[in-house]
Length: 183
Image (tube, rainbow, N blue to C red; front, side, top):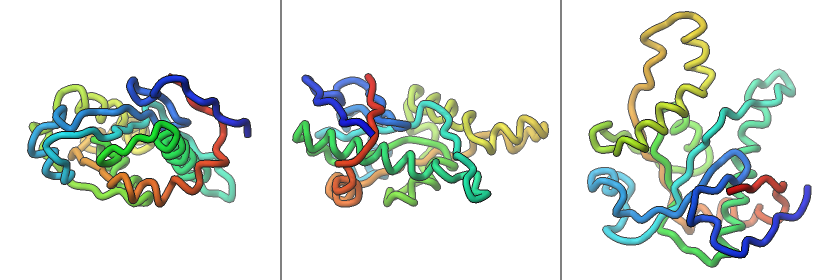
């Protein structure tokens, strides 16, 4: 593992990759009111919005097809926490708008999830969730087997975690993360 570089400017101003997770500083006003309420967001302020832009595959050790995936997420969250400390940022929370598969996984990392109406989510975030769903093994398996019903993404969820809780969980693990940050 190599030491991560110090950013000269705030890497959260633009979407930046921290391992397998991308993050960007987003004003809460960009979310529709019902979505803000579902995530207990204030009327003003900022959050760190995250997503996984590429498929994450496990290494298959110990006959566990998910081995390595969960560690990759934890490492990415630790990188985000480290950079939040370095930049002295205190956003309201860390959040994602996503599909059911990713929402279920996010619960393993302390995120709260709430189902929201697709009508309440803006087009860009809805398209991002659809793209992410198409990267899942569940979708690829349905395509392979020809199951039309299983190919549908299903419901949209918001996943969120208050900043303080995120930093308690991942801020202490941030000193030994691999170098994989790019903007």
